[in-house]
Length: 416
Image (cartoon, rainbow, N blue to C red; front, side, top):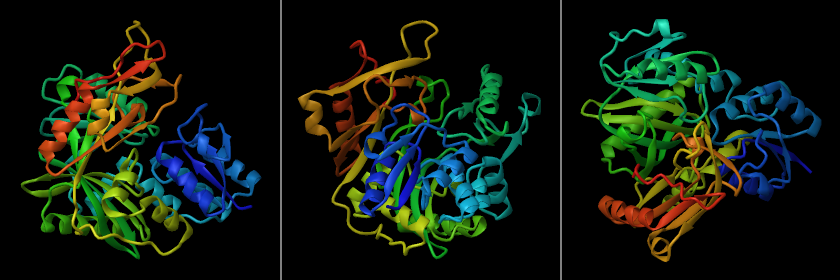
C-alpha cells in the first residue's frame, strides 16, 4: 500500500489526511505534539518535529513513503521540498523556492528586485541595528523565519516597549533576523489564488478584521474575516496580476498562492505571501462559497496532476464571516498556559451560527498570547451584508463560553 507522510497535525490536515486516504494512501502524521488535531484521522502518528528535516527524511526512507506533504504550514513545506529533493519524491516547487517564500528577508528582497509593491523596510540581526529614525511611524517588526504570527508587533513613535518587541522578534526567528517595515494604512485584503501553468487565478478574497491593538499588546492579529471581500472587478484583476508576477519571480508554476495585502489609495501592497493554502477554516469556507476543493488541488500540485480553477465572479447567495476564538491569560501568577476543557454554546448561539469548529482536545495546553497557533476554535456566521454578519457575531459571542479543565470561564471576548 502506498504511503504518504503528512507534516503537521493542524486542523486542515484532518481533511488532507482523509482525502489522501480516499486516494489509497496509508497516512503517517509527523507532529511533535502528543495529540495534534489531525491525529485521530491518521493511520499512524510519529512524534517528531516537522522542522527536523534530516529526521523526517530518515522516516520517509524507513517507511518507503511515496509522498511527503503539507498544505498549510510554511516551515513544514520547506521540509517537504527538502525531503522530496533528497529522495526523488514529487513536490510542487524546488527546495530553493520553499526557502525564498518562507524566509521574509529573502521574500522582501525578491519582491523589491522584481518591482512588486511592498512596504519600505530593512532587516536587522541585533537590537543595535534598529534605527528608530530610518522609517516613518508606525512600524511593524516581525521575525524573518518563524511559524504562525508569533512576534509580529506594531510600534508607534515613542513606544516604551519597542526594544522588547524587537528582541522578541529576533529570538523567535530561526535564523536570528527580523524585518522592520512601515505600517501601511488601508484595508487588509487576503487573496487565495492558484497558479496553473504559470498563470494566476484568484479563487477567493477576504477582508481581514484586525483586533484592536489597545486590547492586544500591539500584536498584529485578526479575529476573523469577511468572505469574499467587497472589491471591484478592477481590484480583483490587480490582485491577479500581482499574484502572477510573484509566481514568475519566485518560480512557482503549479501551486496554491496565498497573499496578504493592504489596499490603500495607492493600490495594493503585498505584506507577505505563502505558496500554500490558508490555515484554519479557509479551505471549508472557500468550498462552501465556490464549490472549489482547494485541498484536493493542493494535492494535485504535489503530484503533478492537472489543477482545476474556480470562477470567483459567480453569483454569491451569501457572505460568510469566520471568527477565531482565543483564551484569557491564566489567573495563576507565572503560568503561561491554560488547560483546555470545552466550548459551550447556548441554543441562541446555535441558531445564529452557520457552523462551528473546535481545534483543541480536552486537556490540551494552550498559550494565551494571541497568535494563530493559540486559537481554540472558530465559528462562522452568514448573511447578506457585513453589518448583518457583525450583528450575528456579537449575539454568538454573548451566548457562548470557553472553559478550562476545572470549569472556569476563559474566553477572551474583548477582541471582537
